[in-house]
Length: 345
Ligand code: KG4
Ligand code: ZN
Image (tube, rainbow, N blue to C red):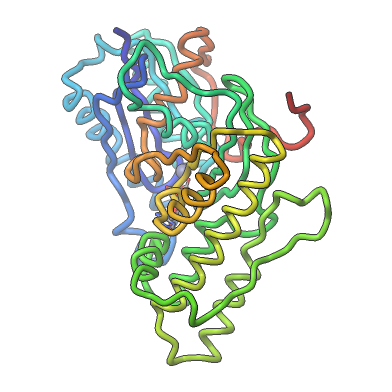
């Protein structure tokens, strides 16, 4: 059995994990910086880099220990090359390159977004290899991204819709700031929304008119609507505002995702990214998708937000095809998955 050591430092989590080449997770260690960034209401890049430097060695050590492995048992290093914060990415890359050099192991460069998608496939029932039903549609919703992606075969991705302004997670964080709930806002709004009555307030959904924008999203108008509503109605119950906001986001994401699934004949729909942990979205998309006979898959909540097991999982195809990276690679802070232009199958 081969084992991959994954390393992830693209934002505010220092993470390392050991995953075997069937996709089984043996350890998944995350040192979160959230408590530090909370004081500033968002991630401060310089602080993030410094905290990654301080944590990275201990996190890697713990991941090996929890998996009962040492570097001799590891077959390759997988590391997030981008997208993400430049300084933060460089710390994980340097750690992975150093270990690869000292222990003479191959290095695999992983796209963070592909990692989020693979959170769905790791830890499936242990089998010979991960059984991924291509082609599939993925709704990737995180703090920096909101996009619909079609994957027809391993390593091939096409973005068929994306946000034209704020990402869904960003909208959650901004609404939490308006309501003074804290940071990161997504889980707090999600929790409060469970106590709210979504019928008492109604926020309209953004409609993009251009035909080529059919699957695109816009969340900045919704965030402004929430701000204006709260200014005009200072006595409004925050739980009701959260419930109404969450309902609008969940319904928008669900409608676009299901129309894309219909257009691209995708039976399987996967959710990925931090917002995939959202209870409202899981319920709304789960029910509407099932009613249309589609199979909706969600990663376990702990694998939705940033972690290194998903990075090691996304590296497995490259491991099998020996698609290794040289030790002089640098970070790619803007490394996006391919967009519309590519031809669909
Ligand atoms: O994927 P992720 O950990 O980092 C990025 O790559 O961006 O996503 C973080 C985002 C944050 O905006 C956070 O507020 C949001 O995901 N998030 C949620 C929930 N849990 C995390 N949003 C809505 N509901 C949640 N339960
Ligand atoms: Zn992420």
